[in-house]
Image (cartoon, rainbow, N blue to C red; front, side):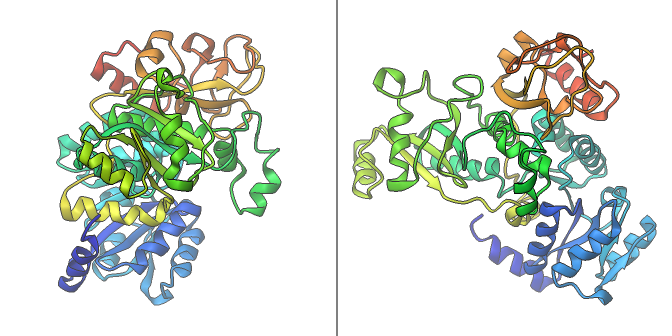
Length: 440
């Protein structure tokens, strides 16, 4: 993101403000609005949520005055108010994709079935898209990337989310000629596969979080989703289903990781390199573990107290989530570059695991719920075994048979909801790559 500050300041001075459209003002969307208002050369020009009062509150929290806020009931009103330089609030999220002055649409809903609609509508209307809903990206990201290319616009994941933060480190290391062996993220607590919205409720209230969101963090689902996005952008794969998830420390430049991530034959835990991992104890940071075949460069790494080698870990001890998202917007509009995009077809898939014993006929409930959680497997394993891609599971999915807790659910075990746009677009993506995944 070098020199983005100067480039944004230049646009501000020239009156070329980047106007964005944001859908969703929950915790992430609200913070995004506040951060963008602080910045030069960019503004949250129109913000949509099904609860209008939440949009008004988000603008107020960001310090926007009442006289600078306008409520749009029609697309013509939205266009007129934006031309006047107002901050536009609306309940109609379709305005984001159709407003004349919006350059970049940002989905912050956290709901895959909404994210797919927002993204496709925006891309087809020649708007760039920043997808903060990683759950949508890991299901149909390759399709959306191709759709953006077709329409001459950019589809990207967000800076600040762990996949985007990892991608910056990965690109930095590759540019330096380092040999990247492992990429990944920290986790701040050991995975609790049994947790559900009831067991986390008190903590969620205390932390002002949605219980389902907190559940998705604690049961490992978010970690698996994020690692899948990292995998699909780099070609790195999980060493084993679900990854190893060792414990480590950020001390001494994550020296623990330099030993852990050796191959088994060299005393480490890995069967191979080129893998994606998570590490308990180094959250909220992200990392890449590298090797360097050049003796002089290796000497400098040792001299700079990065460790003795042959592996070294580059560690970023933070990711700022939605607060960094505007930088992805700027990168698109000013430099014409995405932050993180999937390769041409999935490398890994986010798959579904039974959280408890499940009975035939029982309804499932998706992300952050009571019945399932996510894991990660290579795309090859997923298609060969017919594992259920996790974000396709919603409240209308039903079990076709009894399964035990911990079972990796397969397509012959579950009746998925085939009526959603997410499901239908995923079918199109599978046809695009002829991967043999057997959705109906």
